[in-house]
Image (cartoon, rainbow over all chains, first blue to last red; front, side, top):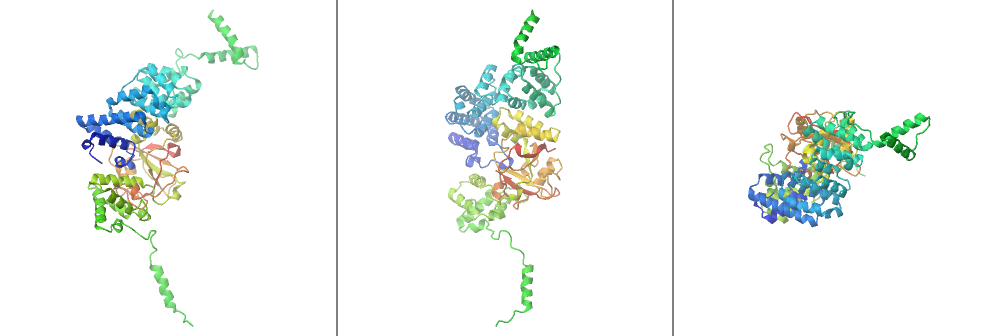
Length: 277
Length: 292
């Protein structure tokens, strides 16, 4: 393995590019038995390097990123580059990442959404929190494939921006499960009670299948059950309330079956109007 | 008419067959020196020995070279095969590395290029295998396709391996870790032929596991380790490891198809194999932490 600080800029750039793509001699010294990540040694060298070396190293990383703009790598390999930038906090890469993110050209390529997610993840790690609207727009561009990243982007603006929007980003149980993967870390940082309360408060606003996913997750992962929603905070959703009234009305009239939702709707609407009057 | 041979001749032949040991499985051992037929090639062999030496491994600084030189699994590979010892000498003759660092890169790259060349371990295909891994590397692996930070992925795995109810732990791990390969490289695993569950005779202790399985790269490090058992899917085949699988720097490995305990008093070696990476969907028992 060469001494990285002895290499010319072009040699360093090529060595780094090959190493992160697990190619040739630069990848030869990765300790595969230990599952060593490809970026581990370059990261250690970056951390320990003097100013001159770090300038050259950052320049090499940025050059590789620019080269990627037109010819993106395999996502597994791009993850190595992204992880190096994230864990090394190589801030100078942010403008290039921003350019790639806003252009959105990778989205049209094979594995485009995966690559685009890695770009956004790296930007977020560098402290570019952007705006809640940006993250919601990106959720649409990513076809809701990476809801955990969108939730992280919203969390960067506070719990109040993230939890109430669960109903927008958790569109099915699978996407909710991906968001719940972030919860152990949130619990470590903020305490179990706080996260349970935030989850409990969010439940009334999400569809039943998502609510069930949240409720089941806590005991399944050994965090105990969620507290029952407090009465003053809990509001039965309108559709659910309408169905309860409908069933009760059927029983009061001695009918075998309640009205179908289509037939019940105008009657219930009238009942609500009368009640309001 | 020929005379009938005397009875003592039969006894002599029978006695000779009885005391002669059976031939070894591989009756031609071709160490490096057999391919070093010129002074230049002999120098290359000496270079390999020096380059792969590790003075910190006081038991035998030349352990890696000795592994490559004596591994019976490599004896099976014919001289003209690109994975043979002879081909490594050819490669270094061709590349003529300028220094030991470059030479080591070439040797390591040769090893990585020729993995899984040992005998197929067909008996292991349906066996339950044991494996030890590192939480930080697993986290890095699983987050390659997620929007998590390294800390978030590590916290997820730490919680997943500590779920108290084993069946729930297994289900949650399969669901949360999914079908992503758990390593970018080939994996090592072992089988305990005398017990259906590979870790049955192991304590939960990190040290006992690391030492018994000969995992020198985890000995006295701060890595958080987990262990699990898995069964190979039908599209993945196990092989007996060779010195190329063990790489140019692993002084803790020994040829012969068994794990090599780092220190005496931690049990015997167990059959080991290498195979392509598996996913959490192949777990038989869930990942559990090795306690420090």
